[in-house]
Length: 322
Length: 299
Image 1 (tube, rainbow over the protein chains, first blue to last red):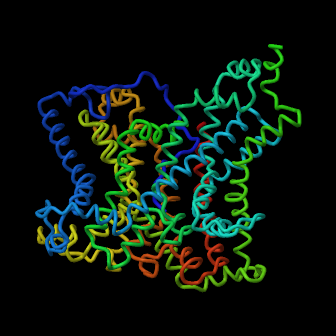
Image 2 (cartoon, one colour):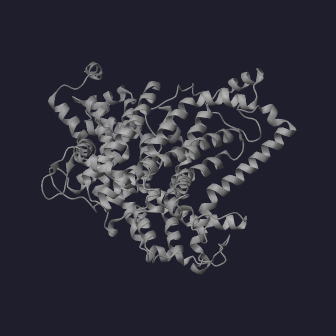
Image 3 (cartoon, each protein chain N blue to C red):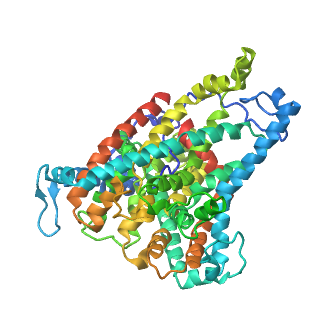
């Protein structure tokens, strides 16, 4: 369970001031008015203070946010004897990149990595298919009792993640009606993932905004409901599908407590759960564990660098602008 | 022909087949919500009044589970620890993102770098941050004690001493999570109209007064929302105590860790775990309801 791990994303909004044109900040001191006036910043003393603060902030940020990652990446390539020294070395004096290979093979990181990718991609597929279909039905087909269903789905947003932990575990261990045990199977992650009210809310709100005329025109031309969804609604919804997909993949990769419960078999575990288990056994060399941590981080860092704009944009828009 | 659909478009389809088609689209979502969300919610409440052993039918035991809880000293320890964690996380993690956001909003250079840097830990899988910090906290050759030694300051046992264990957990949690709040504040700050600052300055308001009387009132709504969200999130803390100090350590056992213990490691008593969950849910429910009520007012 993490603390504000997923973006606090809910229908919410401060009295949003008119968005207006995006404010672009030009390099150099100036730009839009903030707490400190541009005149003061441009004065000789203001300039000196500004650059001192800028330098200090940069150094602190590098130390606080990047140095730990540097320590992790370089820790993995230090030779085990160097890692065990009473005083750690600032940069690797020995170069032992084999740690990554050893972790990949001996700690079976490769196996857990494949597991995690499989769970994340499968979960993405299920959530996207079922949640898109449900949102489409609620937005466009509006069946009897549709608003009640939507209300009951949105009500689950109020549930803290922990509230369902124990009973949902029991449900997965013995699914009602069909009486199958989903523990240690991918279904234990995929199916509960579909019950994601936030996805449905985001998708439905987007589908609601698609002009009726487009859909009516397609219906007149004889397109069925599925055809309308596939060839009209989905192509228009690419932005929201992208954002939802990114959030699903990130959440799937980062999840810890639920996989810990429903995947007790080491063979079936995700990378996060396996790393936790490995770290608690004494036979694992620290350099290999560090290499495992790096490998677990790389996909998320790549996703972040590639989709930075969507992730950071979705964070502030989804959480506060409603 | 062209008018008919236009007339119908706001009305619900009335025919049975229309409804059947719509529910066919809804089916997957409905089944998953029913099985893994709605049913467990009801079952969780029922479980808290039951004794389950999975051999015979669950037995109705009234408030026995709650009485067992109240008689368990760990129950009170867990709540005290959880409140301590939440309180300390507020001290460290609540104002820090706001201060950083105000600072970053004044800086005109490297804006992209600062954003990426502060959000990077949020992207890491939580287990990575926690294991990395576990390695920093190592009392022998961990990074923190090495730095303290270098500065000739007293060393600390960090997670291994009852005095510093909780604060160590809070530091990891703050480092990993404050990026999200920082960027939300930063976005809100960019919506503060610059004219307000200009007007305040014309009136002779000092830097502190502008911060106090212009910036903070403009951010009040965001601050309240993030406060509620942080309380709800930190009261469910699990991975930090689970990984750094273990599920048996009474110094750091939290409500979620105790629920995990009751159900999965020590007691294997799902009724007891469900009763504890119900209590946690009641407490968190108040904060969640306040959050939803506040945010609904604004939309």
